[in-house]
Length: 230
Image (cartoon, rainbow, N blue to C red):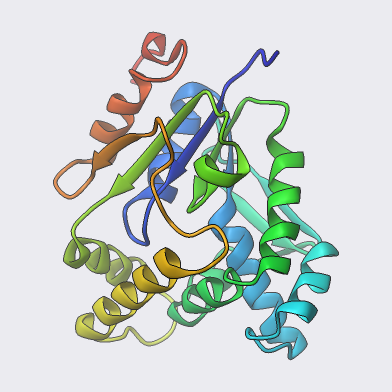
């Protein structure tokens, strides 16, 4: 019996999962586990090791031994992602690595390795997991499940504005990449993107981060009792 809840937040690229998860973890005093960052880190590690994103067998073996860690993201709010001790928070947020994360995530070997790690990290409760299959595959018995969405143009604009490293791509190209990732994520054979049974659907197109979090807190055991930070 869990004494602290497991919260899952799924949805397509640019729907606001990461930002909302951080704020929710802070408000509810939970630990955030960014599963999307794990696949991004896998893509980055593979790129550095010269392993093609199409080589599922080699990627799976690499992921099984990946030295990946998270810190912050709850009351600390500043989530840090480290790969073999190196802070890769910025390196994994580039457009190329974003697409790479989608490519590596289609492989069964990669997903099995990552899901195993996610369950180990979150099985004790007191966590917020965000990704694309956290409520359908990783923790289908989560205490509260959410699915965030937004119109494609808005999601693309969010991606366009958040990429601060390297040369910024034209908005039209970012929109095409977002739509491409939607197709990849929703049609893959292993753990396709879909709304989990019992999940609460929230369209974030016109909502602020705080408005989304307030809606979530109403569905989390004890969450509505959390005071709004001053």
